[in-house]
Length: 344
Image (cartoon, rainbow, N blue to C red; front, side):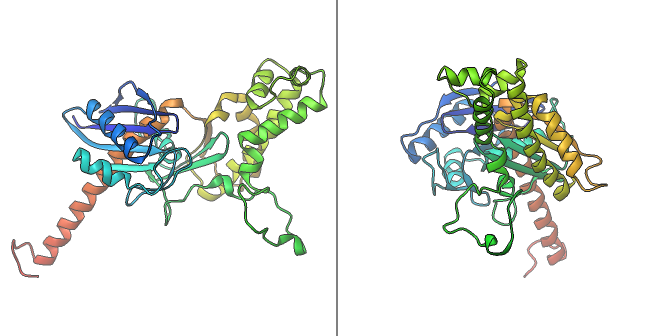
């Protein structure tokens, strides 16, 4: 049986697990070594070496970074000391097996295309990862879609509300992100923070209002907790937020007509309070006839999505390499007429 290791590389922790057939082992966790790029590569190499079974075929890494997939180079990284580090090459040379590196949200989307028995059940999928910002991953035909430069999936920066009349349509300089009219500005966790604070100020007798009067935090998590306990001001704040998420889902449906749109990240903790209004709005704003087969749901794999997706990245990309080698061999046979050692 072939095995594949998945690594979920974040700013605070590294999680590693092994995919054996249709079974993923329990994750091993370590604090991320932030001393420098060399030190972090060494930590990853040691973790993988310790976990490696005899039949290990490849390693996949989902990193909280912008990654140039073809080379495995980390282009930019806010929370990891890996900017401009050729991570694929550095680890591959150490381990002696193929290593694949991609963005963490992208590999989480790949994981969500598989069910709990690790069967591919959604060949076309868009996953919105909603936390501090809005990230996304796209799966088309059962494989990750990356676009021309690897930057596909920046759904959070799609513009969902912007006045475009006369001089108002001039682009602000310098261009800052997230833009005020973007999905990320309207629907990320920070947007729920703003809505929660507004609800607390406007409803002093509410649970949120009482928290504010006592000098306690009034942010997204407190809003979700209050709403789940029945506080109507909090429920309404989440409903407004969820409706904005629904516009993002509608855009994903109109653009890709996927089998599934999945909501993950910290937002998923809101459960049905988020899913219900978001689905209602998404259906209302989807083009008639589009998305008839699209399921809208919360992420199924939770915190395991990153490490599972990384292992599946290794599996699927190794298959791609095998397909390329086979095609190359067929073309070579056709070119030489099947005669070994034929002149070119």
